[in-house]
Length: 358
Figure 1 (cartoon, rainbow, N blue to C red):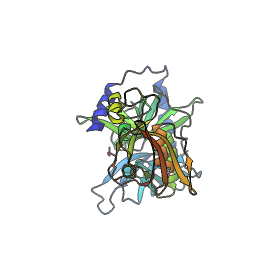
Figure 2 (tube, rainbow, N blue to C red; figure 1 turned 180 degrees about the vertical axis):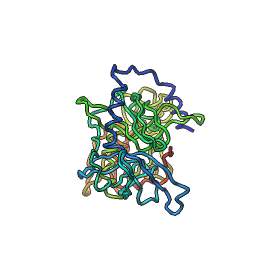
Figure 3 (cartoon, one colour; figure 1 turned 90 degrees about the horizontal axis):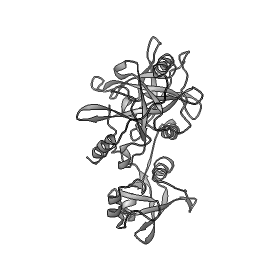
Figure 4 (cartoon, rainbow, N blue to C red; figure 1 turned 30 degrees about the vertical axis):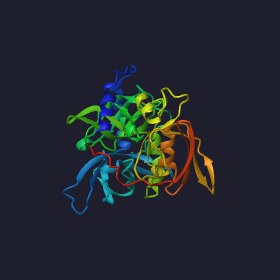
């Protein structure tokens, strides 16, 4: 309920974005001609023992993994937990080909697949964007809703999403329409050199009152980069502390005063604990809502190393992507005027968070 209220407020805050004067129809025609190189349809049976009950289609893209090998990336919810292989189909090829699933992660909602061997002659991995995204940038969503090739255009609305209020900082928001079956598809832009590059993987749509709203969520390119190496190992494990944090520059002033028992605004920016999961590592260490976190250290060879955390986003990403379960960490915190250092061991993320399938 809390996420839905935040989402409705988030939608209401949108204002019209002035688009740069460019020929969108020409861009879409270009993409329609080149998407055969990197976009694929994905056919999956989520439970091989009951193929009639979980059969579906989705979208994916040919990328180059960190080891230089061409592979296919899609959403986890397209392939499911049980499938060991799926079919992928490049447009223009006569038949789909069966490929194995290398790695998958339901929390970030990504799955890495083998690429067909041999690759189609025209196949070409799409590069992942390296330069920052900007609000107002023109983007294009490419996918296969219901198996039909589709390209839509829109702009980036926000570099974040309302999911961040629940501590999930994986997505950004755009208005390029996507629909069921677009899951795992590409969000692309043209860079300063006119090259097509991947800026996100389309994962969720907004549904209000049973209707699909023209607001879509895509996985951030830096998250894709971080996940590739994990997916290549075949087993993805994330660390879990058990708190939700936000920067004081983004905190609701009333919630800040309620949690910290201090008057707003704070004397200096910081990272505020918004919620703590019961019986979590952070909860057992004594962390409470309203505590301010100023430093994160990790134990390396028996001594604590400062991880130089400057924002709530860096704190979340460091724990989730970079640290392993079993790592001993130390948080330097304040509660009011009291300074406390709290030590606890990170655990594995509980397999409870499931992303909504399109």
